[in-house]
Image (cartoon, rainbow, N blue to C red; front, side, top):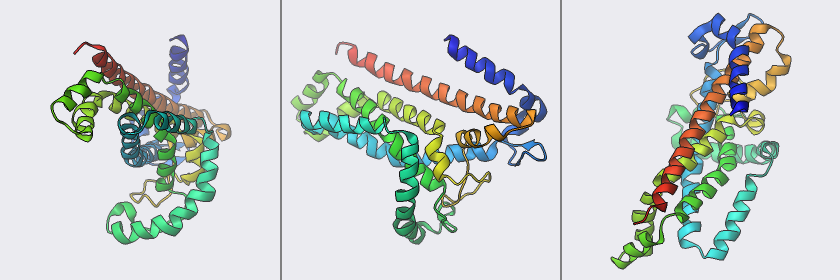
Length: 285
């Protein structure tokens, strides 16, 4: 608690100049010009949100589906072995994901995914324009791989915490194994599953190195996912050591305060949802 309060205090105090100079316009302004002393956070907030949403769209169906398979359908030995391998992905340093993204993912997207998306969904604003490799889409895919282990691991634990009598009752009433899983087990554990998704979202919002390497670091707002962008964590990592003026440093710290607040709130909501599901599972039927 003391460490958390100290972090909030330092971020709040050291971002005071930015708040007093720019006020709420800091969060809705697109200009980021250190030479002219004009700082606006909107492109970085936009980039952070867009890449995180892309990651969730890709990772949530795969993660929840894998968790359902591992907890309800797979043999126990296979489930334990696969869960161990999936959890190992969470231990891989983010810079490794960034390197793999640059040298493996980007060529694959340019060669296969970009033409397919352009031909089928090119009429939408999300998939228009040229693709240079680094982009919102690339960063979102890398983030999806990084947050997938969190969704699988936590969702599997929550699903396995569902009381056995719930399963036996559904089977006794004539439900098939899949009907029991989809209509009884998953609804019973839905709060905890949502909690795992929020935890993954918090991880995606705060990811720095991998995103910095594949997002393009362009402080502009683009509708297309093929365009390069910027995120809050990436700009702090890239420019903090180069910041010279007090307003420049204060603006970067203000971005850090925004990111810190988002991750704390999202993690808190996730923990409450998981706790609610676990407590509900512990109650006698």
